[in-house]
Length: 426
Image 1 (cartoon, helix red, strand yellow):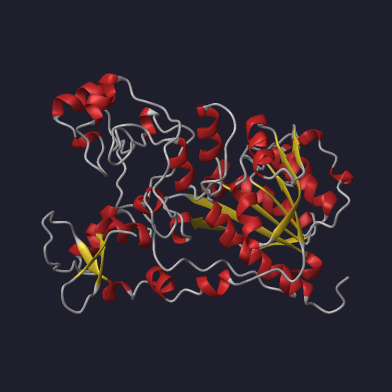
Image 2: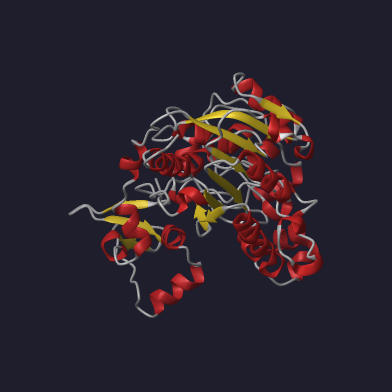
């Protein structure tokens, strides 16, 4: 659980400074200004030897983000089940984070495509009954999928489009992987589609990319729900990961139903929830393969405290580790970064030991191991990954967190249930 204290009297709940900044989606500097301007005041907690700033739960109820968490309908939504079998086609499937979460929500996978051979091996190993097709999506004939497709999903890579003629239509996306996703929508005519991407897609190419996508979706005969960035920390994921979700409803249903975004979980998970026995997992994380540090790097990182980074090193080690970067501007907060058990993990990358985006274990001086990576992405321990250690890191780092996918999946099941109950449905 996120860093919370209880007093010895009426047992009020306390949240740490970092936890409140994460929960309210504001910077630490902004929170400091709020304290200075008395918009929010720290609590006087007992036995706080580390002088950590805490806030009492009662004063956080004035913020919508916190109120939604405490008054959540998560457990009601958890009970949503499909009225019938809903067929799923997934493109750019990766190692299965999205597909597994959607399966947990109640979807039946009909067809999955992925170009990475190790990710395909992972999918086939864990779900031999799934129809996993390895290969370039440009070579997929979607006409060969004969089953009824209720939901089409995919996390297409974000690419710049050609704007010849400035038509901002389907042909302007030709040669990109979004074009292939749109081609699948055009061919399969699913009742609903869901695309996920990085939040940067909203501003990519000065907003022209998302403008083109919206136009193509309209041309295909779908109504786009206003895109939304979901923060994984609100959906029972111990990681500060953000994903943009685009949900389209076929026009013959769009004005008859409403899509409801998932409610947040009742509290925020932290790295302790991922690595230790508790609510997320019944046992401590098992040992697994992982990268190691060179001896000198390990000796330097030994000096970084949990939650700290290069500025927490002695000055001489700062200069040695940072080299020329020491004299440049910017915080460079990912460098020499050690995670903390008492906070959610930073967003996982495709490798935990990259100098710019270090992900050092909170208690041992080493990079996170692959199974630790998987738990932070909320994969079950029985989900096995194929390929080299580097290939496994890449698969996990690129995945959609399973619990986030499951939460969105339940909202999609509810939407399809509503469509199913419309009059005159075939």
